[in-house]
Length: 451
Ligand code: ASP
Image (cartoon, rainbow, N blue to C red; front, side, top):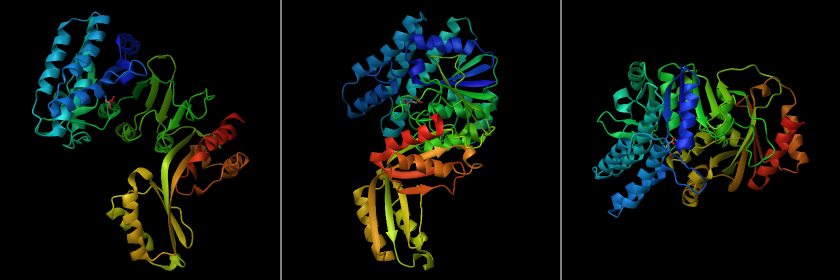
């Protein structure tokens, strides 16, 4: 049995919804369909979720929301009309939206979540109609009826574990199930949403709950590419198979297809994930699996991400000072700053952090605290770093990979400021200044993929 999740671009208009119906009907194993809210039809379009947020903000501010509400209804009505579906569904969607927007606004988070969830909820009802119109026995299933329970962290809610048992029972149905992504219910019966992009999480949870053979994640790319096509436009061949660990390393450094946290439930349950393209359903896409046959030296992808900074602390005889590292990290902990990496020398240590969590005000407080608590000889913060990850299970078994990578970077004139290999056997991480990032990725791509 397969769980298929279709993202916003796959429900953007009638043509896309027709593709969903055809894709699902082409394989009898596809029994559960999770949908997002209608996304962008073109580059300048607005996602329904963003319209819903705008509408909710107007309602909260007490300003006129009618035109935004009409724009939202129009998105569904366009699909209904183009697919010749019964008009009653649009009346139902309008009733639903009006009752949400008229709802209790005393708690901003609760109100916003109820509005945001309307996007996927109505999308699922409409897609169910599209299946019914094709003579398919399909049913829209509400997450409350399915027992999908969430914590009360509105806008950033998490699944309650007992949901798995509920879902395993409620998803056993004869009909094709159309399930809205992105939200569930708290035990008090309030709508709560996952973080943005959370329909991927729903799909992954359902796949884990029913122990699906595959979790198919349909999006608008043929496969996951080994390198960002914006940095290397010549990249043609996608990744056919990679492991969960490789995915995690690649998405850590900015691989954008989907985020690894979203598919964690499927990963934990060992369900293979297949990233596929709604617009090219015949393309096999990328399989993400527990383990695969590894070719020595094989690199699966190169990811890169900017926005890192480095806190450099130097103190003579640091290696002999018991508790130095703990006290340093404790200062960061007290400021609520997470660190990413910590390469060290005998007398010095660098703490690599994301710049967005280390603003100048925090920085000033942290530096003052470190100076008084640790009395370092040197203390410097350097901003503007990029991390580049070369990832592949094949790196473990092969001699000379680091030499090959370092040579490629040297030949391209890239100055490497940091290297980290030891801890993760399947990746080599390079820290470079932002201005070297694109050059470095290109050089590594040529060394490992084209030569
Ligand atoms: N519609 C929601 C968003 O735009 C969730 C999703 O598409 O996965 O974030």
